[in-house]
Image (tube, rainbow, N blue to C red; front, side, top):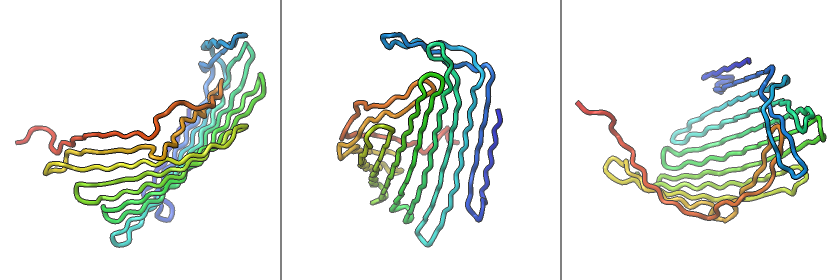
Amino acid sequence: NLSYEHNSMNGLGGFPYSFTATMAQARNAIVDSMTIDVSGIRSVYKVNLDGYRFMNIRGSVNKAFKAGANRIQFTLNGSAFVMRTPGFINARQIIANNTNITGELQSSWALKSFLTLRADNELRIYSSSQKGTNESFFRSTEFINRIVAGAQLTRKLFVKNIFSFTNLRSQNLPSSNFVLWHMFAGYRFLKADNLELQFSALDIFRKNRGVINSGDSRTITIGRTNVLQQYFTIGVSYFPRKFGKGD
């Protein structure tokens, strides 16, 4: 097992950044041995087998600017996870290779504490291959574009809207697109503003879809689940301002 982490507040050219890398390899790792009978029932047992290893890399770079009452910030995040997992299916040895790659760019602008606007662009790539029985390969790509806008209308009243557009592409399946809109509004009570009443309206467009798109060393799961569409919530929060006993 080897791990490395580095952080810099000054960064390259004034851009603060962070970097983390982890690599590991195991002998006699505990892996799955699965049997599938003619009716499709699966039985999974744990066995020891050599050949398991993984690598995980993460990084982040950000930069903030200030011009009068305006604040602008850019953040770039990225990660890559690669895993090789041996195992058995119906007594035949297999090798499963899984890769997850993500990248995200965040751009935000704020005018004092009155108005905030943030744009997120996110990319997720997943691939899985299996060798040893039936050679198989699966790949999916997900694009998410999100806009978050908030306003502090008064000292006690605030509103926030979140718009997101998602494009999901999976191998041998039609592309899936949907747009979500969530809206939040809150009001602070009491002299210290420590009692908050918040109203939330979620999935206003009724477009939420419970897409399942995942995989592991043995199986790949694709489908949909039932999810709530266009629902509303009311919440009450209290924020204590003093802790402990006074003198």
